[in-house]
Length: 139
Image (tube, rainbow, N blue to C red):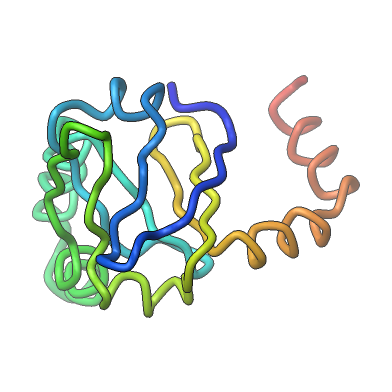
């Protein structure tokens, strides 16, 4: 399970120090791709392969846009000895990440956000909506 919130900055080459705690869970290599709500998502290779098989099992009419979204900009990354990963310019542009980044655990995956956008999203979260979802789950 991925948990936690970490703040870092990109270097001039588009690399970011990926938190060791999350890196250990993701493995020696993992996939970064477009996520929902304008963030990037990182998946372990095992999770990525499971998701890929599920998508492959969908009828083409349902899967074509999802395939394009998930796979077109996906990249396999290998953290270097300092724990940095290179995030492509295409992915950074999609997530509107300029320099400062929030790397968060999101249960079964990791999300990468522009830090300012992450702060805005947190400020806009509605506690009533969260409480309603918790009620639905029986918390």
